[in-house]
View 1 (cartoon, rainbow, N blue to C red):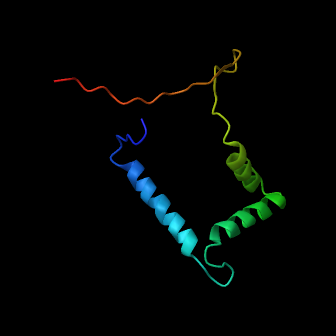
View 2: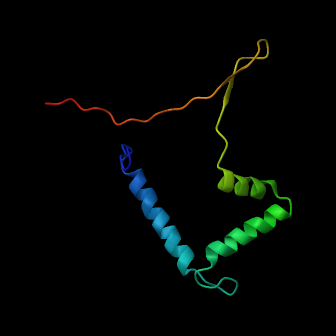
View 3: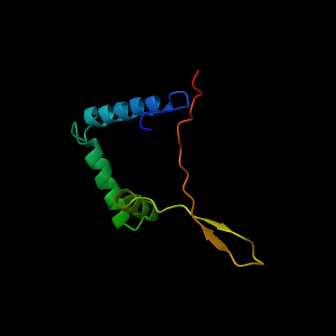
Length: 99
């Protein structure tokens, strides 16, 4: 359920950090970066690294544009053929007993 968090408020802390990070990106400036342009400069640097052949940068761009590939787990050992398993975990809110 949207907004439900049983981890002691990690979602709220993450949201606060996200807002603080956005604010910092908006307000940052120096001799290379005009105010409000930090995220654009970071993106340009990432693209530059990808074009220079940096695999980590290429992977980051691919993950941001296409999404990360689904994680798979191979089961078995060298003596038997391996099976491919793809699992989906559904998180549900626990049902509390009605008094």
